Amino acid sequence: VDLVLFYGFAGLAIGASLVVIGQRNVMYSVLSLIASFVGLAGLYVLLDSPFAAVTQIIVYAGAIMVLFLFVVMLLNAPQEEPAVRRTLPLSIGGRPLRIGAIFGIVFLAQIVWALSRVGESRFAADPEVVDRVSSVRQIGVELFTTHAFAFEVTSVLILVAMVGAVALAKRNL
Amino acid sequence: LDPVLIAQILVILFTFFMVLNSAAVMVLMERKVAGWLQDRLGPYRVGPWGVLQPLADILKLLMKEELRPKAADTALFYLAPILSATAAFGAFAVVPWGAETTFFGLLPEPIKLQAADVNVAVLVIFAITSMGVYGIVLAGWSSNSKYSLLGGLRSSAQMISYELSYALALAAVLLLGNSLSLTDLVNQQQGYWFGFVPKWNIFVVPLAFVIYMIAGVAETNRAPFDFPEAESELVAGYHTEYSSFSFALFFLAEYVNMVTVSAVATSLFLGGWHGPFLPEWLGWIWWLVKLFALLFFYVWMRWTLPRYRYDQLMHFGWKFLLPLAVVNLLVTAAGVLYWG
Image 1 (cartoon, rainbow over the protein chains, first blue to last red):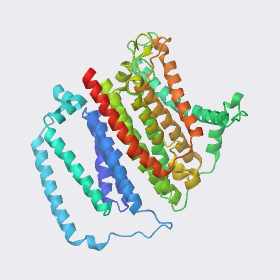
Image 2: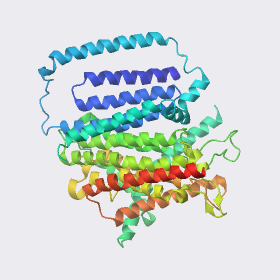
Image 3: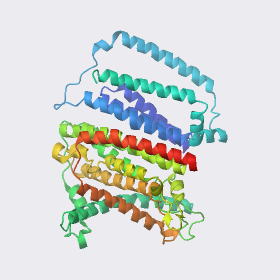
Image 4: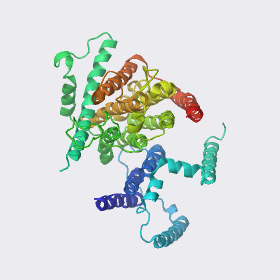
């Protein structure tokens, strides 16, 4: 059963991600990204870490993607008449595409390198490790002791982004 | 086959069926209470006291013609109500409605009266209810109508704003209970102080309960926060273009969401199935009494208060309710640190 579920969720995650980049309609892209996140959450559940799964759904699928959808809805309101299908403006071609391709190749190399180092999964087998990963208490303790610095820096980063967004959007407050 | 497994599956089916029924009961209750509040009788023709009225309503809805605007996005237009209803039902799955039972010794080991006991239940409820907003947003977008779009936008803004206060109010209870499992949290509220005051969280963190209920009303888009469907401004908001079964699903989702929010409030603040006078195995009666008291409050509020203005809603949510929830959380945390 586990294997069937694994392939189901993995298939959902990968398939949906492919739709995200292959889809012209931004709305469908956003939705398939959500589906992909849900697939990932399912994989987390299979890895015995419901907390990670639920956080994945709350933070990504629940909060961030709603904002995405919000923006897309405002920018891309459907026309009254079913409009002629527009293709991507050609100006996106050229240099940004090439830079993107380079980044893609670098990312692929990184993933291949990372995967080759993992070998067999020695992570779900150890019950102590599983316990540590799935326990909310452990995550909290780790986050506020060992990783306190990274945690605080991240929150400062988010604060900076927020202030920046407000400053950009509201020139004259 | 394992009898425990069969019993658990039966409990799950029963839970699903009763949640479905609760929507029908709520429709009747809403119409009856609305009638009384307006000095009318409410529905009384179909069945004794109109108890079969929901059945008539459902039949009427199902026999209507299914309409779809020509310019609507077909796939999303039909996905939206399904998503809405699924999310509403899904969230209820982790709510326990009775103590563990062996059904008078019929089963070798006790089973839990709920669909799924998850150790991060409270977060699961969050996750699933936050998926519910997609149903409404998609309905608004895919209908390709300005009223729907405005309704969808309003609802997403409203739900994002109030989700924060909602979460912070819950966090206060989680601090008290030191657990994320609803079953644990309910069991901690067993017993009495001074012999007669039940150990319910509402007496420890009353402010959190008030914030939770206000944010819950906003989350479920009920009056006085029913902006996504404000009929005087937006015709019917996000479900303007829906009819027949698709509309019925939205309708169902709204009532099931109310039931879920009230059920969670019952578990977290009102001690779940624990109560005086009744033995443990009849705890579900207490649970139902508390649930329907909260649901009655919902209906009462809808027919008593006028709708807010949209900017008032946003001001109230961000500038009053959220700071209040943060202060409440801080005070609770300090209290837990001091006495705990």
